[in-house]
Image (cartoon, rainbow, N blue to C red; front, top):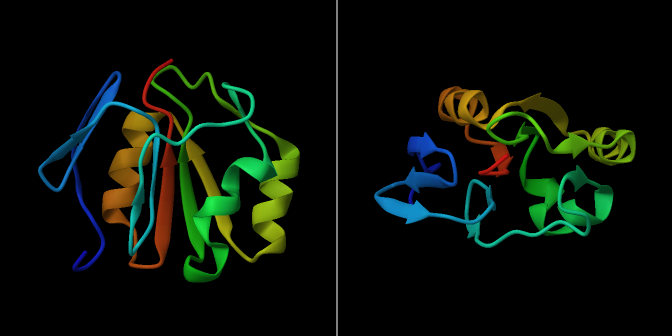
Length: 115
């Protein structure tokens, strides 16, 4: 994948990324996309949900908490990321997509596409 991907559109339940449409939650990293991302508990983001992120390759993560912000980012998850020297930002998913597009190359995002 050449360069950081660009999110072209987000609507409830789907995101378009470099011409490809995704309808399941996903993680976008500088060098790969993790499709069909699932959390242990649907609307809670915990440290174990972030293992695939590969924290050594990013210094910032933008978390999209859903259309209405329903996904809770637990304090343990925030602490886990901070302990790995990753800056954490959380927004409703539409705003998270905008912020990700504006962000630098060493930024990742995890996106909850519904609720």
